[in-house]
Amino acid sequence: MPYLQNSMELNLFFLRILKEHALFMQLSFMPRDKEWANMAVDLRERLTQLLKQAVILSKGYISQEVMTSGELFTQYTEEAERQMEGFTGVPIDIQITMDEYDMGGAMIPPSSMKPYMDALNQNALALSQQLLQFMKRVLGDVDACRAITTLYPTQIDHLAREVRHYIFMLKMLLSGDMEITPQEFAGEQAFWNEIMREHAQFIDGLLDPSETGLKEQASVFAEQFANLVQQAENAEENPEILPQVTADSKDATYGIENFKSQGAQGILSCKIQSIINPLLSDHVLREANYYLRILGENAQA
Image (cartoon, rainbow, N blue to C red; front, side, top):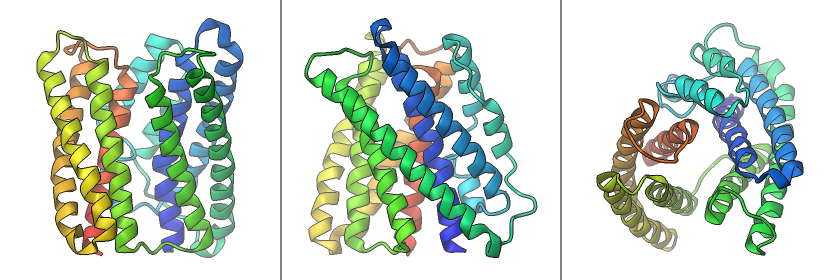
């Protein structure tokens, strides 16, 4: 049962994240690069289908903690998807979000589920590896000044590192190694603290120059998480400091989660001037919510 539940919860979170990564990549390309845009569309559509399968398989298996964590969807997700579809003309399967509101009901018996879950994990692994290779190819051309996109090069690398992390987690599940050591938990914090740091930097860079107060807040969060990255890396070598690092990471993540939540609300209600698209504002919020749950679960272990 832990393998099944862990697999479902991981896939429900990351498959949504990755299909949005593919969308952000799709929308970032210049008219010249239609081939890349089409490749991103293909990856996004396949990730969407895999997420649909994950939702169907997960009925009755998802813990209440995950359902209420805000990592699968938030109060803003459905509206963010509607606005994103309206602004871009790219069709988004909003029904997936609506289906996730109720993940209860009859479950497939665990005795029958494992082959389905093994297949889902293997398919997710293969598709994630394809997405990662695509991102690396794009980033290589951007770094070599053979192409430009509307994403920062660091944003593309950021998206790719999240895909790589998902691949690592899937391989752990498929190997049956789901235990996490204190050193690995410290490494997990170093990873997510860096993600939160970069989120703050991206938000700062995408806000309109007139939004001075929000830009200052984002800058403070970036500095705070830069310090926490160093602390988490120190904890990998010195596990005795890990409880304090975890507490500090949790406090900082609560802070940036609230900042992101207010930001999503402001962007969706057209009260914040920026070039942050509606779905990106919700995307980064879900990642903070996921990290908060991970911090809470492992701190109690």
